[in-house]
Length: 102
Image 1 (cartoon, rainbow, N blue to C red):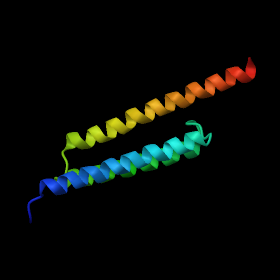
Image 2 (cartoon, helix red, strand yellow):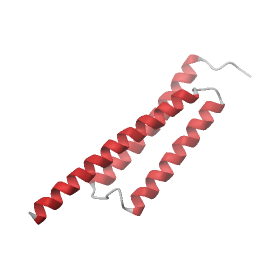
Image 3 (cartoon, helix red, strand yellow):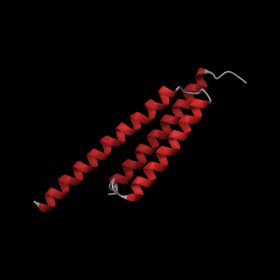
Image 4 (tube, rainbow, N blue to C red):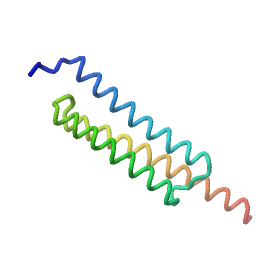
């Protein structure tokens, strides 16, 4: 079996990062279009996308293209960004609700 080159590792990581960024953009679009995080469709899409990414990362780790730590960092970073996005959406929703009721 041929050795995995640094270029292949970098490419694998870049592809996984691209997929993580794509999930973030998808969620941003959903929130921008008034799909609140409590919406079952939002949760279903997020769960499906996150599961898919985690499987891709597991596969890359098993092929020794990235380390477990790199994979975990990708997921942790995405989850952190999604938390910030979710909190921002909730804050905006609360502010809009106060304006309507105030």
